Image (tube, rainbow, N blue to C red):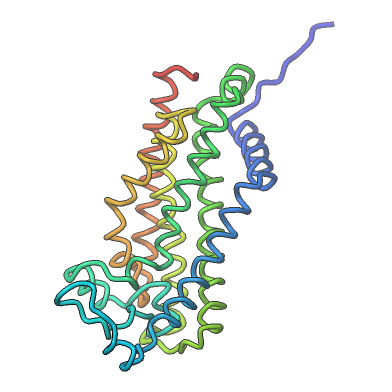
Length: 278
């Protein structure tokens, strides 16, 4: 009796790869550590800046010695004026902030999650090469294209969850700090802002994946390279995803995420085909 071996098509291979990657992602402590960090950061930032941003005691300041000439010792730390500043700023403020330089409110906000996502993606991918899982995977069944697509989707989901955790932490931190929730943006624009930031995560994940497959088991190298690439794009995020975002911002971020995922996905696939897997 002749044995017949059924060849798996692209859909079945990708489904199998996604199932394995999502199971690995949601059973590893790394994801929950990064989600926890994303949740705690906005609470600490909002509470601490609100506490330390209170006006200083003029008597204590007068009797104190100013450590640096020309520095106003009475000036408190820059504090957030409302909860939504931990998410972003409206279009006009974002543009003026970029022209005038970085401030505490433009640096310590939800955009930090893109840097945290770099750590998540780089460590997740480098573990595949460090453990020999990737080499065994490509030898036995999966193709490199399936691997790249699967890692891109899994990394995107992980990054999106981190953004949502940061948002939740920001709302709780703002309530604890007693900050107002009033903003110039409408509820619909705020939703569009979050959706835009989620879609923009695909751009960064594609970059992180390309760097990670090039560095392979050298996680330190992939993290440094990914953080460096993130720094180049960091200043553009407030203008692309302001608080008063609309459908144009959503479409722009979605299109950018799709283009980067396809383009850099092809680069990642080429790197895997042209380089050693160890």
